[in-house]
Length: 417
Image (cartoon, rainbow, N blue to C red; front, side):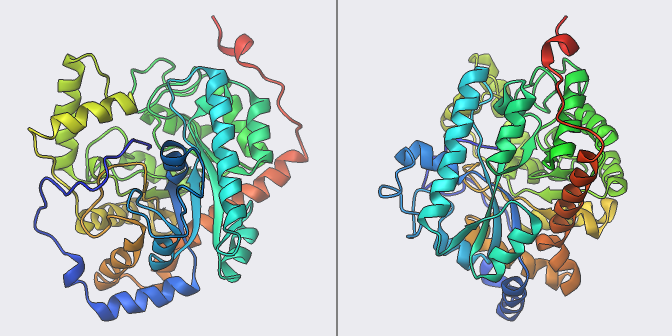
């Protein structure tokens, strides 16, 4: 998810919950030490978008090595939050034409490489699970790239392959809008899941070793991709539909299939996907926006509308306890080996109480520890599960490359009618 945020806003409504002040300091200290020794890998952060919007990627104007007030992410807070590795999202609007989407995606990729180069004493680029662990062992934060939406390849498998060469290690099949070959969770269904070309996209991602990310896609697309994929898949920032009923979340039957696929669902912190009350508020805002001719899946236009809407309709917030409920539901349905963390910082304006910025992860892990989570299971949640998925995808790619070469499939003959 990516959005323009209005900085400095206090929650309109904060329900009673476990607060940072009531978290046991001894437990926080214990899980902090655990996360210092084992990498916490967050699946999704939209800081590159904020760099584009706020400074045009000028790190002299927006120096992320210093504490910032206009973002939810900076290097000091990543350190405080014990983040050992971060997938940086290179999201661009899904309303862009193919050529513009590809160009802006490349600009975002370039920005991540510039950021890692500028702050090389604190960040290190990683393309594989081994590189991630090596960067973490060096005392730096491993930096990986995820492309958020199939519109970023412009219906071209060649572009997909070139993004991989540039270091992109997952692609979310859609964002808020359908792509010609796959349906989104927040658009009207057209293909009924994956089209014939969409199947080729997944197969080629498997072959080159790019993780298939199913956040944002429709349930039918989830099921199709799980059926087609020859290696484990991921959800980079999604929560459980049984806990919060929104199409952006993952239904139980898909979580059960994910277990068989050996993939991972990285639970997000976005209040609209975590809190039923906040999800209901968004439905009301979406209905009101539609009356004004604004579609809720038009990120930028809807966020502008919602900023005015909430002045007269208080927006409930979410809590750490509710995030815990999603994590434990994914664990209970898919299994503890198939759950991870994908906060979506700097991709959403509001965040749960106690998780307002990237420094909050130890409080979440302390809450889980106090509910009986073992250190072994906390390490799996933090990053162990994703590392397993990455290694399986890398190994699968090596095997597939022995039996087939780059796909020459194109969109036109497969899908164009």
